[in-house]
Length: 110
Image (cartoon, rainbow, N blue to C red; front, side, top):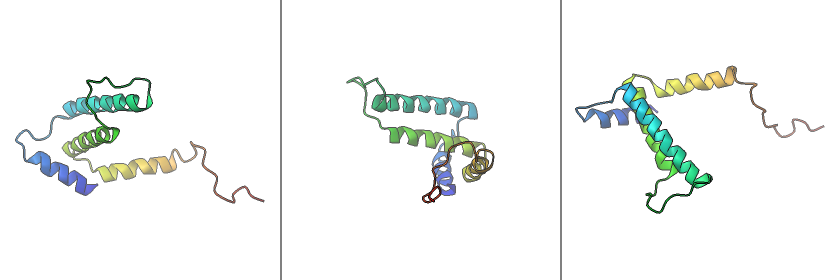
């Protein structure tokens, strides 16, 4: 993850404008989420694409979201790897009994 954050920073740093403000990036993230929702609706929902709509993929839209998220983290000096570890620890502790676990083989065998 550190390498990804460095690569994005190297890319953005070549432009005078640099990172957009956090509020502008939040708006961009929201816009990209809408585009992802639209693609998912086309593939899995009841709304087919119009003939005039260009071909996009869920993968591309997820990539756009990921890029903006990394930009936001970089601009706020947030280590995404550390943020990931924090949230995983939360799921392992606070939410450890929240979901029904898949039984392991032999667990209920007599």
